[in-house]
Length: 259
Image (tube, rainbow, N blue to C red; front, top):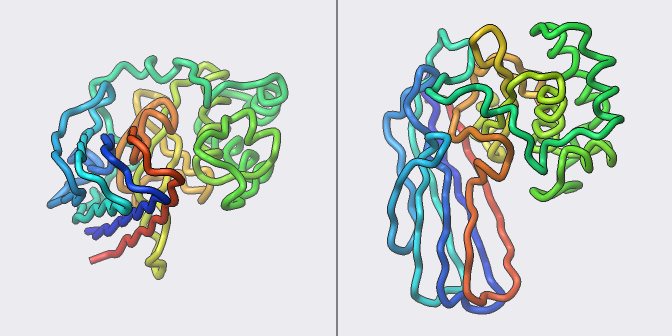
């Protein structure tokens, strides 16, 4: 299956931005799970690319001229491997994904929740945990932010794919299982306009197993991988610093189409 992606992110500012540097992770790589036929990022400014510590492609854009609006456009064609049942492998030691982060810590209530739903460190038990997390934290857009931690999302009992992933990863790490955060895109038939997506993966029996808690999907057949990390902050699509600009507003739209 080939998937065509069109991802547009529009920024507006209440006052002119004098200069800025944007750090962008919106470029997928070819791996055992997918083949990138072509991909292009359109953004003003002087650009350069490198790879981060997790082998994600990292684009830097520097702008020195004042502006009040900016649009980042990512477009490309990715072919999925129909035989892929697991997440993409890389050369990183899986134990790297046992490292705690501020976004993926457990409190005592979360630890007891994990223990009550996982009787053994097996795939089917983790699926049971993923279902319990979604039951406990219903999908509720616009109720959390990128700064919401796993503990905060669990406490308020609402959130989105980022929160589901952080909570699930936090619990798996507590259970002693390497767990990573994946950003990318999800293809849903008969649905054109989506947001960029996030899901969790857990290392079991020398393979990375997909746990898309928000959609209750446990194989990555319809998932395009863009970046992996320990939490959202390792894979954030756009981060940056700017001089002036006042208040910032952002609007994003994603199309994922089969072709």
